[in-house]
Image (cartoon, one colour):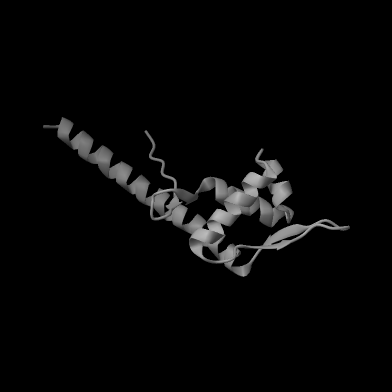
Length: 118
């Protein structure tokens, strides 16, 4: 038996705006330098990926991506320094949650088995 948790950030109404999908997309943008290329890696439309990034920035109130428009040499996108910090901090947050879930799972099993001994 395993415990699994996923970090998700929501707005005040409870609508998710950052989770594993956004984190994967940010990593891919960082790797490929393009929202379009990152979207294709995960089977998303460019518009869907663009909207995910806009929703993230709107909700956290900070710019995560520096976008360059297309043209003769094409456009691109890169994570801002804040975007890199957000990605790193979110991944650390997810790791802390996973470790806490594992500790909780072990305690749960210990308490469950303790009850059987009575």
